[in-house]
Length: 169
Image: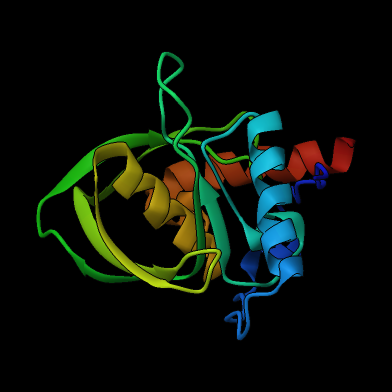
């Protein structure tokens, strides 16, 4: 396994739409393992392909708490099939926009389907933090950042800081 460099905003790769994975190969599984190692090393609770410069519909997540055993999800071609009408506010951050957080409103549960690392189709209902995380990561696959879900004023404030930080690095 290898830790991959995380792409930081305003890198244009973060605004591109990831392509579906046609065949799950050993390379695909290795990439998912590398993504998991990168996520844990960061540390974070989720990572999508575009965040490491891979425009593939791949995500990894682990929303377990510090006192719980790891619960790693590795998903290929995840797709939300249904979501609740009721929503909740969660504070979100992003490994690609380090140091910036904002409260984002999202459905409190989602149903999704995806392929596991063996190529088997799976369907789950995600609730709470896992639901927010999977929505955040699927957004990355569609070129959407969490700041796109907040008010224009707050988004502009964060974006100005991101641009200033990128010029200084």
